[in-house]
Image (cartoon, rainbow, N blue to C red; front, side, top):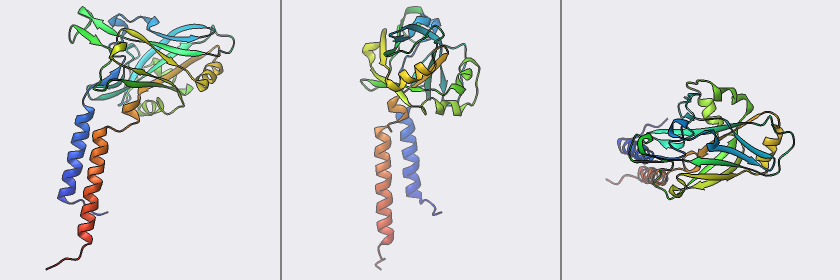
Length: 242
């Protein structure tokens, strides 16, 4: 394997540092959503043509695979240097026939006064972007039990939370602070719900621009790096003139 020259190492290191700096800015939805912040179990609902189901459990896993079952905050996105993905589960035992329309109704909180410990107002939305797309994915049944237990280092669960088919999405902005966000569920989601009639059903969610789309600064750095490599290759390929 060819070693990197000092110049190329500088580009790689600078690119990595700049990418980290770009990711350091908070970018999340559903922040401050713990029940201790005044958000009850009715803050997350599965709305169908056969009834409304409140969340059985809700929470998050961070990018180290850490999860606390008694912390029902359902933040998704980038916060203080870590990525969070959330989940919601529902008890569909009362459901005894197929549904034909469904959506998630999720409160994007706005906490004011004494409950906000970082300022006079704590917003559920934070991002340098005018809006972020929140999406939900199907979660494999094998992980349902882990939503109710303390977990460490479960990077497999963190990865699985966006590995399933996408079931729906919604754009969220600062205008949604203190409001319910409706996430329409597609035909794949309806199939998943109907497959779990009479059972528990769970979905997982994330922020699209973090888990899918590279940062603009990262794209620029990659292009710059490729340009530098290309120039260096051309220079090395030229005959020396003495």
